Amino acid sequence: MLQKQRTLATGVWLALTIAAFVAVNVLSGALFRNARVDLTAEGLYTLSDSTQHVLDNLAEPISLRLFFSEQLSRDIPQVRDYERRVRELLEQYVASSDGLIELERIDPVPFSDQEDLAVVYDLQGVPVSSAGERLYFGLVATNSTDDTERIPFFEREREAFLEYDLTRIVYDLANPRRVKVGLVTSLPVAGGLPTEESAPTDYVPPWAIHGQLLQLFDVENLGPEPTEIGDDIDILMVVHPKTPKPDVLYLIDQFVMSGRGAIFFVDPFSEIEFSYIDPQQRRIYIPYSNLSELFQPWGFELAPGEVVGDRLAARKVSIGGGQVVDYILWLALLNPSFSNDDVITANLERLFMHSSGWLRPTEENPAPGFASLVRATPQSMSVERFRIQVRPDPTQLLADFVADTETRVLAARVTGTLPSAFPDGPPGADDAGEDTEAVPADHRASTEAGHLVVVADSDVLADNVWVATREFFGRTSAVPTADNGSFVINALESLAGGGELIGLRSRGSSVRPFTVVQDLEREAETRYRETERALQGQLQETENKLRELQGTVAQEAEEGAPILTAEQRETIAEFREQIVTIRKRLRDVQYDLRSDIDALSARLEALNSYVMPVLVVIAALIVPLVRRRRRQSQ
Image (cartoon, rainbow, N blue to C red):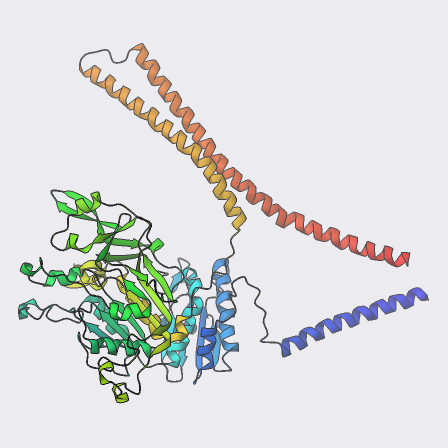
């Protein structure tokens, strides 16, 4: 009877436990549907303060449509994993938008209406079969006025900037007015005569960068010395300012103090301007620009009178007579020179610069938000400007090259608190004595929301630096040879977002590689590569000796000597035997390298597949026994 009561009690307890478990799950699903805990190392699923600020200021609903080919991606786990990452982050946007963002998932099954919709929105379909089936993984976002933004395909390579891309879309839809760029320049960026003395026949067509700007922004040419900068200007783009008047400097300063973004291209030696001036004046004229009157109060400066020479980034130039030499002042900068943490430069591959200067924080009151975007390689030095004023000698510059330890920043982002270069008001206010009307009521003495991009080169914009002209069936087209245009567009788009988007940086990747395995692989590879290099050297030396001996035999044969002596035959046989032996040892080394790595992978796989389950089973068997013994002892 007692045994039946225990069995009944156990059954009731089990039933109540199951019921409680189900109730808790149902209740928690209803009450805590949007509650999440982000345990990732870099907070991948936690929205940044900048994104939350954008969402808090939404004034109209935004619709997000995530196109993902569910069926076609079943055999592509990497894509499915990344889709889950994107979807879960989008769900965070929905949960944090107070109901103003809606998310819809669409599966564009091949040859369906949903696929037609993906084609209409110009999403990128990736072929996955010979039958013409395409995999889609993109986003279409719209606002209440049918403005549309899209991501044609989510590329895993941009995962670090996934939040930036999504927040940028939401921000643009919430602020649909086209960004207006005010262009202040002494160069014919928008086309025109290069100098005041130029003849009408010297007309320069608009630069390629100007055409790219017009595709994305409203551009207003303010001339080299504007008398006013309208409130409708969102970003100021200042290119190669020569000697601006104090009134112009004050206008630029107050624009920056208003918290709007600005990008500056200053140059210790502008090669493009140098090419425009009269050859007779080139010996006495220095085509430079600087804004030290503004930059120094803001906490940074352009190194005066210095251009950067870089041995590793030097481009090759022809100096006549079939000779090609590295020109250390013409730079082809590659990815290691770019900041991977900033959206402006993270995805750039190549940037061309000519006779660039370099930037640095000032020793007194350095800018707290000074961050490198582009820098020279460790093999760089400063070259005095006078050495290239008349006719630079690439060969002599290369011969005189001596690298130093200076870190040279060629382009920088400056953010945060900036003091005005005119703290007491506009130019002339000091001469007004006690007249308080000399200082305008809207004068700004500082800003906490300054955001600038500064580039120490103006030639970076010129067509001859980064654009090649191609003829195709009678039609001329400009083909970029570097990412100069992308750099400028990225900078302007980043500045256009103001403080909301400036705060967004890379967030890391959801991919978690086995770093221990990678370290072991590198260690094994280093160990075996040394032996491999030694064997490769022996093999090369032996093959050279064999070719040399065979060449001697052939020459002697032409002179009537016997084809091969016994000693020569023996030597050739020895060389061939050595080659076979070295090649076998080389194959053994390569095999050992791969076998060590494979053995490590096999041990880890066995640990995960067999050892851990066995431990779980053992624990499952031991725990009840321990509990039973405790009950019996009581």
